[in-house]
Image 1: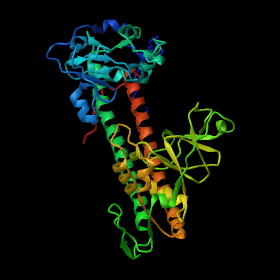
Image 2: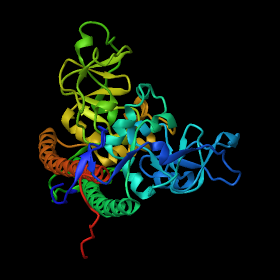
Image 3: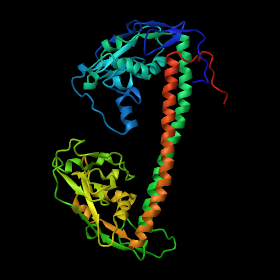
Image 4: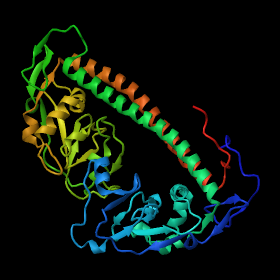
Amino acid sequence: MSRYKAYSECRDSGLQWLGDIPDHWKVIQSRRLFAQRKERARPVDEQLTASQKYGVIYQKLFMELEGQSVVQVQTGSDILKHVEQNDFVISMRSFQGGLEWCQYPGSVSSAYVGIIPVKHVVPEFFRYLFKAESYIQALQSTSNLVRDGQALRFENFSQVHLPQIPESEQKAIAAFLDHETAKIDALIEKQQRLIELLKEKRQAVISHAVTKGLNPNAPMKDSGVEWLGEVPAHWEIRKFNHCTSIKSGQVDPTEFPYSGFTLIAPNHIESGTGKIISLKTAQEQGADSGKYLCSEGEVIYSKIRPALAKVCISPSNQTICSADMYPICANGGLLNEFLYWSLLSTWFTSFVILESDRVAMPKINREKLAEISLPIPPTHEQTEISEYLKKQTSTVDVLLDKARSGIELLQERRTALISAAVTGKIDVRDWQPAAA
């Protein structure tokens, strides 16, 4: 934060979470700035949702923004609580992400606690202060129950003293943070768009290579499969069950030596990339239900939620996978590595999505998987394509890692900037936005 000037005179606030503060700031009991709202919902109140991402907004708006439904109280609305615009809400997750700013009047769940600004409060300033990491840590320290999922109450909030700051200064800090965090958010959004484009490029490279090959001048033929279209004329089209075998028969992961085997489950694999993101033994994971034994180099494919394309290569002969996955061995001229890339392709994922059951947890069964047609090049060409895809995806993955690191740095800067401004570590009273 060296680009911003510090206050000329500071003193110890006496609070660990605040540290040194400007000499003209005061420390005050939070009850003197905020009171608890104890009003039942009014008949005309529209239901609100408290979220760390958007604050407290109308449920309908939340569902539109997130594309998902939330539980609405249809009867017994007398258990709901009324809140006003510029109130703050202590939600069930406040010990993780701070208090939420209420942007609209309406009603919230009885599990939430509404607090009302009483005096010396600029809500736009406190929306940032209540999200500062040091404040959240102070809030966490008021209860030993948060680890057990217990909600924080007004009594917890009351235990954390707050800074009393001139309202004009609160407004200046809020305006500064609005401007600066908006710039950071715009940069984060650009990096997120870049990540999406890189992911799309990665998928396109894989899909093209495993269905069209690497020779743009190769004669083509109709595959006879709508999803595939044309493929190189010298490639074969074979049913999945004619060139692969799916293992059956489970082992007990609690028995020696399987307890020491690496256990791979769907949540250990990154969606759409084939990367294993966690390697732990069955014993370390407390596995107790049946698992499949996998040989090194075999393909492990998740049967549940096939849209996520959870697939990887078994790293060793001492590997077992969860019953939610298929251990698959390629045969009859199909190589495991080429099968792996095929299962990661967009065309394959799109097909199995349609073939999976239309339920809350979609699943592709063995029978439907068996009927899928695969394009299969000669083995030497499969090897060439696999080597090509390793290099191409590795290049894209480097760019993805850089973009993700960039987002992390921006988020860290955003967090540090908010903390510095709301705890008096930088003086922005005279700040003005740069001329456009």
